[in-house]
Image (cartoon, rainbow, N blue to C red; front, side, top):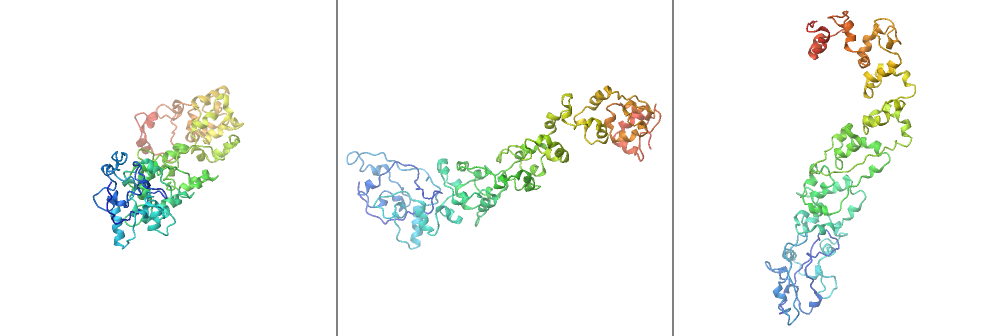
Length: 484
């Protein structure tokens, strides 16, 4: 192979590397070339790498150039094929442009070995450029490649979404900067603040765009569509190759978090919106979810699933909870309905003869009339008053005999009950209909064939009733409904 006259050596130092501190940047995996073995053949790097000094010429030699020596006679044949296609890197770098910048700065000390060899290495003891070498030249005061200022990233790197030749495998090996190792880095006030640390016309930190794309952030952020910094990133599914994990904040690990998380969420759930969807809260709260849960975004297509919660017993539900939960439920039923529905309670408290004592306290039978009358509870939620009440009362001889005065069977407890039964009916009509039908009332209260007792109390507004439901009037008055 003929030897070309030496040319001026050109600096080929690379600035910062593709998010790989200390890792050699090799463009793909070409057939290996033994540089040291050819040390006595070439005295100039540009002999084979003419593209670093001349525009429009290839950086790597063609196969025909190598066959000048490797023809099978002078040297054995080799299967050399120059690299083709885009550079497998996210470097924003060009040898000619970089050399022009150095010449403009009157820097005449450039050499290929500045970036492609260790200091003091022998001729042709070369390697791909490394990040420490670039940083030591361009940012000599920086502690390391991954700690350089955010504004320096775009000087050397393309955003990840524009480095189209990078494979998912290479992206997955991007090392995390030291700041990412902080236990609080995932807190919104830490990494979120860094992402917003944009300069100039950028709407997101340049360091974020170098390694990440919108898909990466959207994998955790339920509210990604509402975050300007995330929307400023370009979409690229390859960014999901970088390992990621949604980690609960430290506040979620405190013993009293279950009791405090409602207050922390506030009325609009703003502090929870990043990681939680409505469905995340509904796992525990069910249909009776608080306002903060209903204010969250709903899970759906194009949105991260967010934090996956699992319903678990509150710390108050100890093994002895079953024996003492009644008074607590009575005092604050709303706290129970956050997790439980009526059917859950009825699995134990269903009032059937075999478990009648399971719901009501001991001796409740003696005072249940007062509760039924005052509507201390809704009996009809569990009982069919038309059957359940009568089945017991009939067996006990408490039968409504429809007497107008005196003993009334069922109402024996108050022999003058008939005189004040109107108030009782208005207060708890459902108790009446467990035994009585409309005919019993019309015996006295019908103006058509009854005794003419008006069922209307003082101040009754007949016109309002007619407008609201005239069918009630027809039951007593027929079609001849009086007007005032």
